[in-house]
Length: 254
Length: 116
Image (cartoon, rainbow over all chains, first blue to last red; front, side):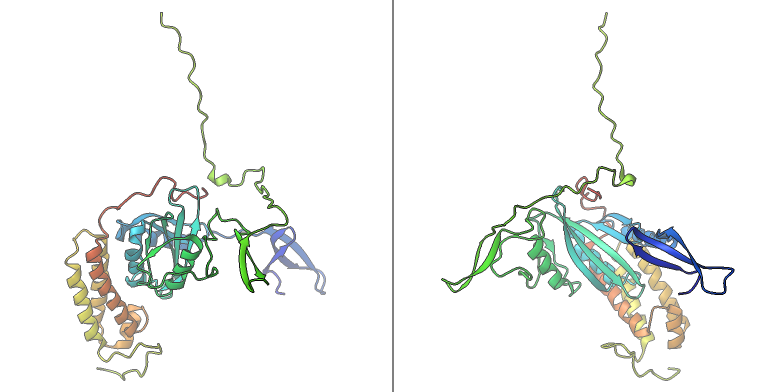
């Protein structure tokens, strides 16, 4: 263990940086521990570089880009209109200043309260510039999204997974079929309205000598724990809502 | 051609180019030609023309392949050729898609609001 360099330790009380100091008097190694809270240092340089590149992309493709943001973890996110999936992905892959030739991930997020409940997320990596970017679009249950298989071959199975788990249809996909669920499975499991235990359970039936699917029977009824804390959770995202005061009585005109 | 031609790029599927200057010259002129179709004020045309002109000038100035690779600073010359080919294909598709037009449709209210 080198003295003076911080050790990152996760204890029962949470993570802390432990700095080990040598005892000045004793020749024997006698250490004092100093606990400092672990806070990620802000990297303004990377943040500004990513913000500049985000602005560049938004300037090049104003027809499709709706919003650009850099998260606090220095991750660039570009939000586009669903019609622009193929143009923006092709631009990011082929343009010399971008060269995001690797598709890392293609997923969906289900937020049922929104009008377009599914948010399709593409993660791309540029090996040339050692940089990552996240592309987001939206769709609802019935509107198809253009398949990105023509741009990145890696999208093939990812789009099949999104179709299987969420029910988002990808137009012009070469082979869109289920990939993870069972052969006759009905429903889209990752949707928020699909229950944790599912609707059917399977068992081997000796009479018919095969596996049968029957409606699920839970031995214990499902317990939903309300995990909301009584304390305010996101102080940085407060929305100041002024209460609507009812108008007072107008004085009688004389 | 000054210097010994290198035996391999070290990358699978990317063959060594015998006359990279010539190839790059052709590609960059084709890119500039296909950018003429795009309106002058489009950001894509501005920035791509700037990029292509810079690289073109470097190619005209430097006859030695290794020094040229270092000046461009974007990997081997064969990779630079591949980038130029991609840019050419992209510029032709951009002429079809016309991404410099204003936004197609604003997102619905609260679409990108997080936390919900």
